[in-house]
Image (spheres, rainbow over the protein chains, first blue to last red):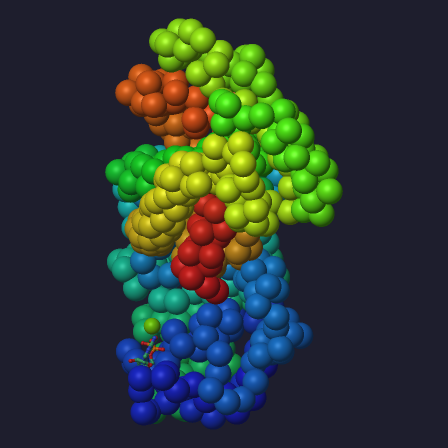
Length: 229
Length: 294
Ligand SMILES: Nc1ncnc2c1ncn2[C@@H]1O[C@H](COP(=O)(O)OP(=O)(O)O)[C@@H](O)[C@H]1O
Ligand SMILES: [Mg+2]
């Protein structure tokens, strides 16, 4: 599903690489936590998978495609296979819950009929049934993140990328979001989630990849957040 | 891409940037109005050219007291002249008739000529090559019985210069206003892209094509082009009605410069619309390209 070989990323303005000589593969259907202190390179890693950034050296394969060889005009079609969720939700404030989710379908060319069927389905799945016509500012943080997850999932992506999705949420709400991501994973979607929420990583007991100043320092199946001494 | 979705996005965009949209429309309008003016000036110059250089290009005016022998000699010389294609004798009566027809718009002028003998008889000469008219002037100017050789070019030159001046001015203003329109379009799209940066960011993340992302910008440009073209057409109509037909009425009434007809103004409109739409679409396509980079 995802394969990185000797990937180094140095931003143009920086001298120290954000990621250094990273070699890693993630299987289809995996649930992987990406942990590490702030600035360790988690977001950079996720942006490489999305082809938002290109590595300075090394190769990135996602879904059998070498992203370095992906033509510019093929990037949109590539991204339709990937869902994204962020700490700040990134909802459109002037659209309702249903419209926010439908947006992802509309701008990728789905017909109205499909949108009318799929959007309520997905909103039901994330637990927002009955709140279709609310505006984002009428929702709690956890509910807003559910809208974002619904939008990321509405195209049935094979990969879901979550960059600190619980970063703005309280622990109880976070548990609900994690249950939802776990459910999406069990439906067959690969999930890569960057976080520095130790409690979540410890309770989920999934694969943990740890970065430290751009270096891969740990790759552990069924890991916990910190080193078990 | 759902049409209704595109339309809502479009209306939202226009509402958000109404002042800038107005600025674009105004600059497009000014630019296109002057494009139209330069087309009309070209039309007028062409009509004038046809009218004056149509058949007989040089007129040899004869003295009142020319003898039949002198006239015969002149006509023989013209017949054998290699540069002359054809000539025609216009007597006093014919000269008056032509005069009355040409200045039908100014009865005062027509009525002032009571006697046909006031207008000189002439030999209207058509040349094989109009460029050689100077030779005719030199050859026939001093012949006995010739009053003067009249070169219409000498007389028309100031008029053509005037029209050319108007044309050049209109083209220059059209170019300057066109540059202003492009800069305003650029700035408008920059602002629109900024106010839509959330949408654009999300569109890119969920995999919307560049076409989808750019479409609202290009459509906004096209709408500005259409509205600008319609407004420019209105401006030309007002210009004809209140400047050409009113303020400059007497100037055209002399008949030297052919007046601009309504169908001339109407004929310019499709070109204004076409150039407005194409230019606005191209400008907004390339400007928005900068802001939708994946
Ligand atoms: N767009 C950028 N330009 C320059 N440097 C960047 C950029 N994004 C991130 N960095 C740098 O790269 C390093 C890793 O950042 P990031 O991937 O955001 O880490 P994390 O998500 O783990 O906090 C940091 O030192 C950060 O300052
Ligand atoms: Mg980060």
